[in-house]
Length: 269
Picture 1 (tube, rainbow, N blue to C red):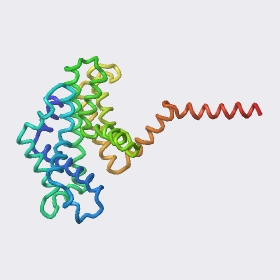
Picture 2 (picture 1 turned 90 degrees about the vertical axis):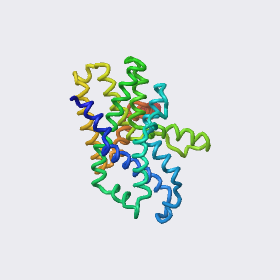
Picture 3 (picture 1 turned 45 degrees about the vertical axis):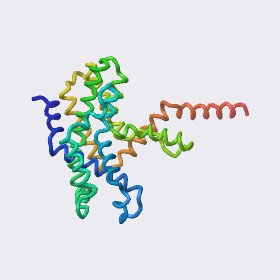
Picture 4 (picture 1 turned 180 degrees about the vertical axis):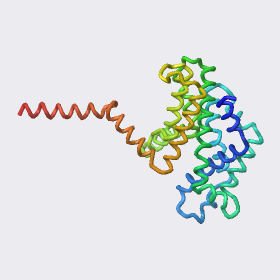
């Protein structure tokens, strides 16, 4: 049995999906907790149906968006009753468990270390699935659609954040919302590029098979997630992006123009 089939079976396992859904619910609660100041009233301010709907949308965002891009039924992933029941149980455990014990366990470092490889496996499986489906739907030469599908299915709801920021700025006539891709979306974009090269049988991968690419992508992504727990990888990526933007997108040219302008004015005087 090859590694793609093993990863697919692992991603569909009951325990795997339970931990994955619980981790998504924990992330949602942490995001909601940032908007409130008093921990005593946090649970009272949250509407159960709204938090449940947000959890469902975050869990199935990648599948819903990809189905839209591929011309399929967008809500088809929600038709599995057992999976929806498991997703709902994970949401209830994190938000409304007795004495808040579910959320306390999910916040510990041991759970984060267990969730890191789980999210990595789920991300790699979804990206590979999206690349393969897009390649059959659009053709292997449609590079841009394949990259978009792979990035969307790998990042899920986080891919919508730049669009939401643009809408917020448009509606409020301000620049309060900062338009940028999340770190997860950037990682999904890079992994999608690797799978696209493998789909094209590019020589840049030096003959790496799909099975080998699965292994390398998993090792790299799990290592990245573990490093993110110990070090601010977002800050490192931000510094790297600033250096690239400075070198290739106008920053260096602007400084050179200022330098030569000062140099010419010095010789004139």
